[in-house]
Length: 67
Ligand code: SF4
Image (tube, rainbow, N blue to C red; front, side):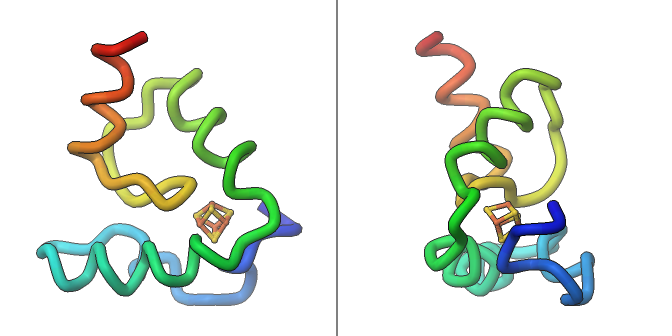
C-alpha cells in the first residue's frame, strides 16, 4: 500500500458506486508498480468491495471462480 499509485489519494476513489468510477480507479491502478501484489492480496483475503489491482469486484469474483 505504501508503494502503490493510490498512496495519498482519496480512498473513496477505489470504492466507486458506478461503472465510470471503476474506470477512473482502474486507470490509476494501470500505472501502479505493485498491481499484481495488490490483486493477489485482495484475492487471497477474499476482499469483496472496491477496485484492487485494477480489478473490479465483479472481475475478482470471476477470477475466484476460475481458481
Ligand atoms: S493496484 Fe491500485 S489499489 Fe492496488 S496499490 Fe496500486 S493503485 Fe492502489
